[in-house]
Image (cartoon, rainbow, N blue to C red; front, side, top):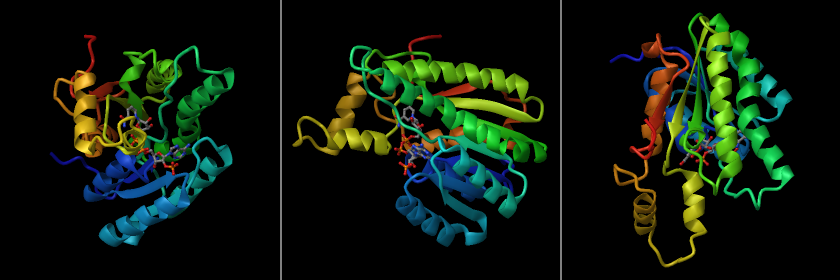
Length: 263
Ligand code: NDP
């Protein structure tokens, strides 16, 4: 199947590692031009250098941006339009989860988490909306979490914020139609930097990486018996972002190895 992404412009936030990086690479494989951002300039610079060497510097634009910084996001959108013109897809992927129960989540932590989850969508969508509309076939895809539908008490504020974001995306899929489609993926557990950090902080430091991840998959009862890989989430993001998904809006695709227990 041809995704129809040749020469299309795809923006990926949080693209210096994990799912975002895999998505940027796949989009370039499909012939798209890619604009990527993340906060840390060093890791982003290394990634941009590698992608430019592989696919050509004329197809890659990388800019250090915190998606919560309105001015920086606006500058990024202006830079992308100046370089590539219209934008066909915005993939809102930047972020991370917060592990805390209700008892140990302070008001400040609640505010930070709600700000991260909502404004990592709101700011890029506002900034890129004109360029997406100008493409005549704009698409927004959000990396969301299965926690939106299946909350976990040990991630209480992330779960709650994720559910609210699904509601926001559903509303936007109506408000922005027919010019822009809006979809999301619901990630279960994907082996990215987030899990690498938790592995490095493991209680039993003698446990190997393979054993720690196998244990995790077992404890979480993942029917497919393992965590997902970043490119397994990236393929779904890119499909929803592409013209191949032209009649899909307001939808969510679960990428979890079957971990959900709802119908
Ligand atoms: P990684 O930590 O590997 O990648 C996260 C990326 O986002 C990095 O490039 C990071 O770079 C960037 N980033 C984080 N915060 C910001 C910000 N405020 N502005 C711009 N860039 C930012 O994690 P994943 O690939 O796992 O995460 C991708 C998305 O998937 C996240 O939204 C995460 O919450 C979600 N997710 C992941 C799950 C998993 O199991 N992996 C489960 C459920 C959801 P830098 O730090 O330099 O900014």
